Amino acid sequence: MHRKVLSFVLLWVSLVVPPAWSQSTHVEPRTVNNLLLCSWNIKWFKDTGRDLTKLAKVITKFDLCGIIELQSDRVLEDLAVALEAETGERWTYVQSNRTGHASYIEQFAFIWRDAKVRIASGHVGNVADFADLFRHEPYVASFRAGNFDFRFLLIHTRWTTEAEREKEVEQIAHEFTFFRGLTREKDLILAGDFNYTHGSTKMEPVTDLDQMVNLVPSGTKTTLKSQGQGFSSWYDHIYVHVGATQERTGKGGAYDFVAGLGYASTQTARKEISDHLPVWAEFRIDGIDDD
Image (cartoon, rainbow, N blue to C red; front, side):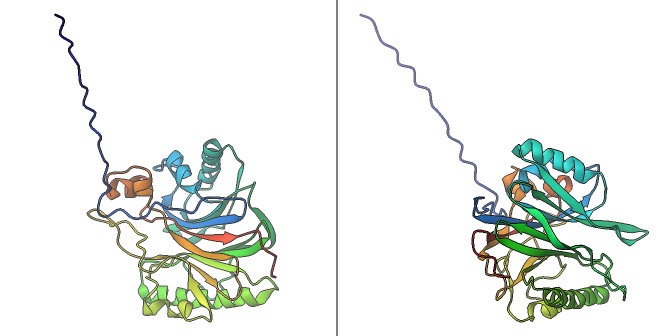
């Protein structure tokens, strides 16, 4: 009598549970009818110390990215190459003048998919700062995607010297009003690292502007803790005038690249990528041009 021997192979399924400090990795899907826009403070973004392949994997979730803390003229060219390798599409960028003082210099930049976004007639350049209120003069550029044309204004307030940071917030509120009244184009997106939470009284010059809304949901944490694991402050915002910018869908947030790229530690991600998450918002581009 032959005995049949049955071998059982036990398959262990390992369920990966994200750490308790993880945030959302959801970003709305890209379609022909929407524009996904983001603002990202990429800490000390220069030729060394950043994995451009990983940066590209994050930025490709969007169509247009405003970059803060750029510190190299060459690295954007390398980032565009990495984005094109990741997507098979052409990407274009513009960057601002160098801003700051001799001891610390930054630039702003915009980088975008050529197939979805193009630079449009209008303003491109740093904001005039005759009173020398800004350490880093904000940067504005005009864009068009589908039937949606708009200006995109980036700011990075100083972390040091809070009294001067307050003046920067006050002045950017004036600049927002100025640009909205300058031409017939009323769609203006103000975004960046304000170094204040949305609910801070120091943000009232911006938040008290008529019909101003933050497209990043209340309480979103956008910075990685300097010590320990997890996220801390809500310093990064995207503001629009709700009466003018009908193209907004109301969907937005902060993309947790720590979880999205598979990091087990926010401290490692902070060192290799940035101490800020990109904040994003969705806009419709298939409606009528209302201005």
